[in-house]
Structure formats: C-alpha cells, structure tokens
Image (cartoon, rainbow, N blue to C red; front, side, top):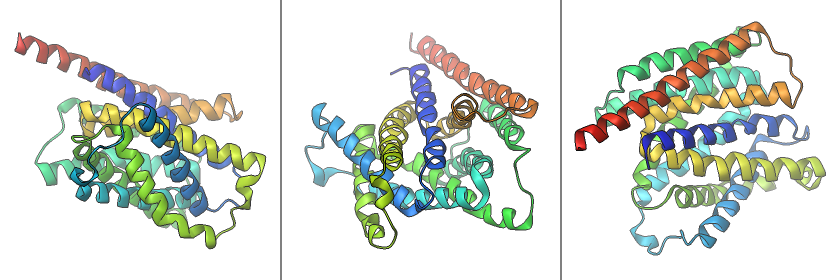
Length: 299
C-alpha cells in the first residue's frame, strides 16, 4: 500500500472517530460513561469478529501472538474510554477536543523520541502547529478557563497520552496480524475486563430506541470501522504522522454538529477549519512527495 492511500485511510478513520461525541450527546441522560465505554468495546469487538471470521483473518496460532504489546494496547483502551467520556461530562465536548485530541501528536512525538530515538520530519512541526491553532480557533468561544475547568483538563491530557501510547505500540502488533484482528483482540479483552461495570451502573437505557441507536452506532462506526481504517493507515505512515492526521477528527465533528445537529458556526470556527485543512493537506502532499522520492531512489 502506498503512503498516500494509507493517509487517506487514516483520514477516513478519523472521520469515523468524529461520530463518538455525536452518539454520546444523544445518549439518554442516565447513560454512564462506564456503560457507554463497555457497550462501545463489546459491540465493536463483535463487528470486528464478524469481519475477521468471514474474511479469514482470525489468528491461526494464538500462542505466537505478541501478547506483551497486546496487553499494553488493551491497557490503553481500558484507560482511554473512561478518561475521554468523563472528560466530556466534566468539561464538555469542546474542551475535551481541544486538550485530548490536541496533545496526542505531541505525546506521540515525545514517546517516539524517548523510546525509539526517532524525530519527526520538519513538515510535521509545521502541520502540527497549524492543526493545534485550528483546534483552538474552533473551540475558543466555548473553552472555559476557570480553575475547575483547567483542573479537570488533566483528564483529557491523560486521555491524549494513553491514546498516543496506543498509536506507538499498535504497529508492533500489526507486524504479526492485520489491523482488524489486532483491534478485535484488544477490544475483546478490554470488554471482558470491564464487564463487571454492568453490575454497578444502570444499563436498561440500552434497550430503549435511542439507547440501541447509540450503542450500535458507536460500536459499529466509531470502533469497528474507525479502528480498521485508521490502524491500517497507521501501519504505513507511522505513529507520529498518523497522530497529526488524526486531527481530522474535530473537522468531522464540526461538520456533523453544523449539518446534522444544527449547531451555529462562527468566523473563528471557520478559520480553525481552514487551518486544520491546511495541516492535513501539508501532511498528505508530504506523503506523496515521500512516495515519489522513494520510488526515484529505487529506480
């Protein structure tokens, strides 16, 4: 697969991730973040299992799998879901997007540098600066700078960190099995570990019409489809570039909010969208140039 096609898959996966906030926003009021997280992983795992089963991508030798890396990925998934959903409840969707999504590329670059000694290309710094500026612009009007909000912002900062670890470690697993299989196993283990939460929090809202739509949608689109596309692209672009391209998620979230939820749009938000588009275009065209350079060198 070319790096350009991989970048496109990353963008499509990020757009699928952008539906997470929408599904949570329409969930019943008594929907606990723990139950939402458990339902998200369980339904996502079932969808991925069905796909892997019919496409013959189930592991043939389970003992040979890189269980050490799978354990790290599972820990990240278990930590990310409650951190993200509690962040949304504590500081709102906008602040969570600014902090959690914004710090992920920075955490990823730091982890890559510390663990592997790899520094990102120059274009990454420019693209990440544009993307962060875009996210701040898009959410400047709704970002609460009160002391309580800044204190709770530790939650999305932590969410961004564990997601960055996931982006760095997952490619190690995908050296042995496909992206869909990787996320099926990780989500399956995580859902089993979190299963006891159904005895601690009410889950009868799942059986309402709205609850069923939320559970199926968040599992099928924001987990099954999103992780399959995103992690496949990540395998060929690298975690640092992938983390920044993942900033397309707030673009999708904004479009969903404006078009489908009727949210008002300001000049700051429009300016932020332009900055995000510029960041993504810079990285995508950088991948095209890298492909041409690599092809020329091989010839």
